Amino acid sequence: MAVTKRRGRSVGEKTAEDIRSTALDLFYKRGFQATTLRHIASRVGIQVGSLYNHITSKGELLFEIMETVMLDLLEDQRQQALTPDVVERMRLLVYHHVKFHGERAEEVFIGNSELRSLNRTQRQRIVGLRREYELMFQKELEDGIRQGKFLRVDVQVTSFGILAMTTWVSSWYSSRGRLSLEEIADIYSDMVLRGIWNPAAGQLQTHLRRVERDNAKRSLAAAGASK
Image (cartoon, rainbow, N blue to C red):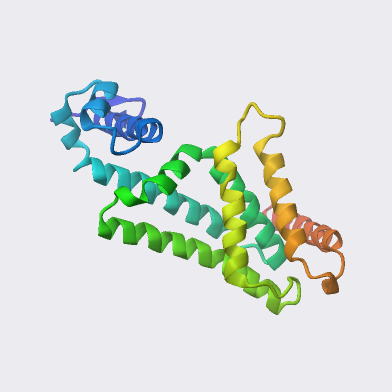
């Protein structure tokens, strides 16, 4: 049977997207337990039975939302971790963590509040992804300490502190506020680096300016090579 296309997407694909975005909104505003499949179907404009053409259960829908946000966060940060300089890597990890959590605050809230609503296997998967993410920050702290750039802090406690502080942005950031999300991300990344920077390595701002110059030179060289 032919499937009607609308701007490059099938009707089924659009309906699946509508179900996910509606569930996300309702889980955020009502909570997972207080949201029923009937609520979701009514908002999307389909029959409850039609939901099962796109999802297996409400719990699976919650898991998919929580898993997707963690996978997207990990992929975003893996790109930042390719940066050669350890100090710049940490700056970028913090910067992008703040931006991500400000831009996707509803998903972050659901992820933090509804872990208890997952079954055991789903919960283990999400906890495992979170652990993988925490280890990214711990690895950078360890690398920076080995290179003499960061103070000899307690790596685990410091990483938890950084993540707790920066994740909280998702609870209070508003696009109507005094500062842009980018400005807030700059403030947080600067605060973190100043807190862990080892003065024996020189001046933090001098190091960052040198990294910026090196990055500019590499960009120019890459542009020239591509011509």
